[in-house]
Image 1 (cartoon, rainbow, N blue to C red):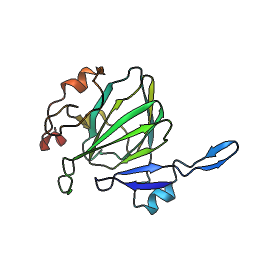
Image 2: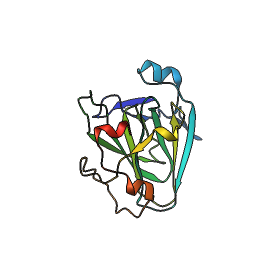
Image 3: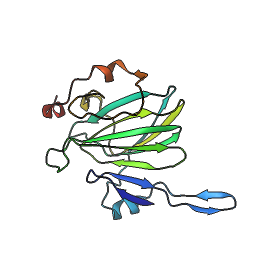
Image 4: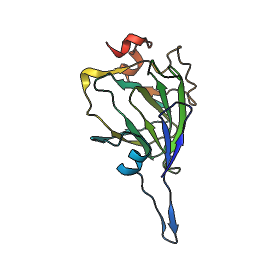
Length: 181
């Protein structure tokens, strides 16, 4: 695997290293030892998928408040997404900055999202599926979020938003104490 730094410290794009021959290729997408060697959280306790019918669907911006904050490894297994993270770590040099990467079934890249980040995505094509691996169990009482179009961040979404849940639409703008509420 290739671990590619992003402009936000501790977040990485992970590209599988393909071993190709006449049959196609083989590639490792997860290795606890390689993650530990990179200084990344190697603990995975839960996996989930998200399937989205319509191009332009937005999910996010989501995070879990401490002490249930979670690291995520996100990969697009069908279709394509514009995957966005926001650094919510007050002590970080990139506090409140965002970064986005296109994850597709074809490029097979993953995004490693450390604890302390919000996450969301927009589908770039119809019938898109995302595979998540998480370091902590989902804890509904610590689930938080802010609106996808929060003016504090000015996230540049590539598509017109065609579908978004009422919960995601009604999130408030981000405030530092939204980690606590």
